[in-house]
Length: 157
Length: 199
Image (cartoon, rainbow over all chains, first blue to last red; front, side, top):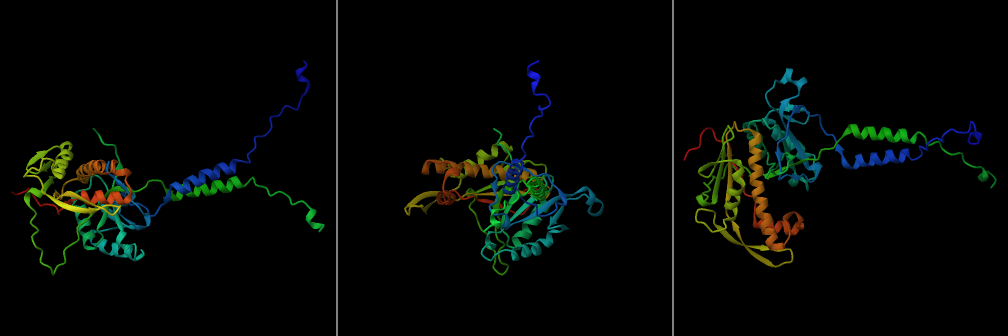
């Protein structure tokens, strides 16, 4: 047949991958901009409550975290299943909060110290007793700006 | 110069994609996506010990007591209430539209506007007092806090609409602080009660 003239020269040209690095860089920049560095290992399991009137925390560097919840499974043998308070990378009691806040405050600029916020990330099944102890310790440590961490929820009508 | 005429060989860029992938994977592993959001509150400072705490007598009409018991039931003022009714009750308490004698009194306050003028507004004296027991669950506590915040936010929105013609979220920082002064977020979080409420 007439069409079969160019026999053997029918290979498809290879797809150019020259733009692949650009695409990957684009994804890379997206992740660099939209994410933040993981700061600590979370040792407790918590399910945050839902709330609709939440505000975003302004400056990450001014926020210190207090995690409250049941220890994760591999820590339960040592620490039990009762809700515990996690400060930095270990379990602490409410009495240690004063030291923790003092240490966190030390790391900040003097100008920023008044802006320091403490974010309380507590599990929904925690009892208020433990939260109140934490709040009292925060008051004693004069860390008065707090934020109850919550997930965004729509208002049900 | 003769040496310059020589063509430099192209640098092989085929591994650039691998390098980019490597960086990408690093950022995927080392970072988190979730932004921190939450209900922002300011705790009252602990009064100094050498100063005698004067019993701050808040006029009874200026206080809305919200009590949550261990099983998550709500008492607002003198009546038990469902959480769905709390927002409207709190709103009525903050605004006091009919100048009811049992609802908070208002204090005429001059607020400085961003453009330098003064604006006189009747700022409510009301304080919402939120009390819990030690056994109340955190979930219901946050729900109640959220409803109360919602009430305050709606009032702020209404004031902002009538004053600036915009909703509170669209205001500039200066205008926001004006509204915040007109409708301060007054939620007092007292220490938990041991047992039942006494009258």
